[in-house]
Each structure stands twice: as structure tokens, then as C-alpha cells.
Amino acid sequence: MKALVQKTEEKQSIVFEEVEEPSPLPQEVKVKVIAAGICGTDVHGISSLRPPVILGHEFAGVITEVGSEVRQVKVGDRVTSETTVFSCGTCPYCVEGHFNLCPYRKGIGSGVNGAFADYIVIPEKALHVLPSTLSFEEGAILEPFACAVHAVIEQAKVEEGEKVLVFGPGPLGILVAWLARFCGAQVLLAGKAEDRGRMERAERYLPPLSTVNVDAIDLEGYIRDHIDPYGMDTVFECSGALPAVYMGLRLLKKRGRFFQLGILHREVPIDFDEYLFSRELVLSGSRTQKKSSWEKAMAILNEHSFPLRELITHVLPLERWQEGFALTQRREALKVILKPGV
Image (cartoon, rainbow, N blue to C red):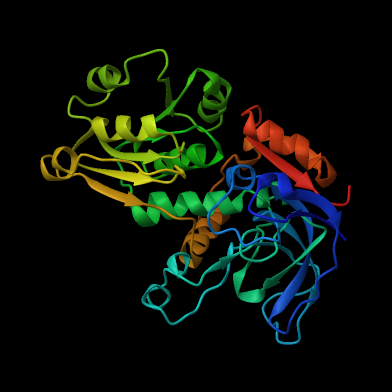
């Protein structure tokens, strides 16, 4: 089968080549990949990568073969998957259900072979059957949706009436903003001048949601005059941009909460006296998702409609992966879906 393989830690080592087709172990299933989304980590890299490995961790497809011990799913089921396919099960994090923090965790597309291929094998325990209302392309967005659920509902526990600021109108930032609105918060989504189209899309498909161009206005003044003179209750930093980190910390009210979702790829000096001691801010991260995140995400989507399709701006054959990566890197695409075998 054809697959997109990263040979070494260097991004220039990615090749589209023929590899051996996988076979499922007793507790695994084999899935024909129908749609796979490009994530920023595919393009820019991630520390947990263990090359050589097939990339891709956002996908949906059809089960074509099941292992001898598989009982909950069957051939023909439309499925997607959690990214964590191995965790030790015995460390304190696993015992408490935080499989995303297991020191031995392996994720698809980084620790084990991923979904930029014709087929992928996945443990049955990681699978989720797609709601009948979702297409395969929308199913490929469920992984970032589960990440947003983990951040907004599990980590931040956003409540009705909160004032929430989200930096970074990429797919994850938009999903975080939409979910915060779903929870009843007043949401401001902040981006730069080149993000205008993304922010308009976010506003158009799930109003009422406010957006702001930080290149054009004084964000601190805008928040003081139009939202709350004391600042925001909660900030989600989804851009991975250092200026957004410092701006977000400044714009929180005392006892506000800051959640880092974007990967910064650098150390960030922070004045603890100013932000933690003097203002009692709460700083936290939100890493990927866990099983409970997926369960909540699927429950939400079974009861409510989210315009996931509107995040998709490009659909390309897998063999045109370079074009998709370039569109993502240049920020000319919001979400690119790759389709193997077409």
C-alpha cells in the first residue's frame, strides 16, 4: 500500500512510498482510511515522534478486518479513533484515567504508524463508531474536536456567563471557541489580519461569536470598554505564538485562568510575582485528549449539531500531500483533508 512516511526527525525526510499492508492482532481492527486531516504537528513536528513512522492522526474510515478477540465492532462499521493506542495502565496517570499523560504513551502518527496510508490497524478499545449524521471528512475532524472538549469542558470547566478569550483561529481555536459558546460563555476569538477569512467563517457558522483583529485594535482597551473592565475570566492560547501568551496573561482578571493548547517549541519566561503571586492566576496546559474526552465529544455530537464541515477548505488525494502541507504551513488552508486511494 502507499503511505506517507517520515524517515528521520527531519521534515525533509518525508516520502510517499510503498509499504507493507498491516494485519490486525487479536485485539485490533484493520481500517481502510477514507479521510485523514492534516494537523499542524504533521507539518511543524512534535517531540513525541518516533521515526520511521507513517504520519497522520486525524482520520475516519471503514473496518475491513477484525482480530480474533474483537467483540464490540464489526467489518463495515464507519469509525474514527483516539490518538492514544498504548498506555501502560499502571502508572498514577493511567490509574486516574489520564492516559494522555502516561510516560509510556504511544500515539498514532507519532509513536506508531498513522493514517496517511491506505490502511491502519487500531486497537478496538481506541475506536469510536461515527454518528450516522457525519461524513468521513467530518469524522476526520473528531480528533481536534475531542481535544477542544478536553480543554473547554474537562480542564477549564467553562460555565455559562464566563468571559472567554481564545487566541488562534485555526481549527482547534475555532472548535474551542464554538464549545465555549456551547457552554454559555461570552467568547472573543482573536487573530491577526491574515486570519480575517478564518474569523469570518467562525462567526458565520456559529453565532453569536465575536472576533477581533489584534493588528487593528488595542485589544486591552477593547476588552475594558466592551466586555469587562477587570479583564477576562479564561484565556485559551491555541496559536502557539509567544506574543499571544503574554497578551493573554495581561488580559486576565485577577484569579483568571490561562490554558495553553498551542505548542510553542520554546521556553517561556514568566514573571511569577506579577502573574501568580500578585494576581493569583491559574496557569494550566491541555494536552490532546483522553477516553473521557471522546465519550463527551460523541455524546455532544449525538445531541447537537456543530458545523464541522465548514472547517474543511481543501480535499486532496494523499499523493498530493506536499500541496496540502504547503497550504497548511502558509496558512492558506484552514483544514486540509487527504484521501488515500483516489
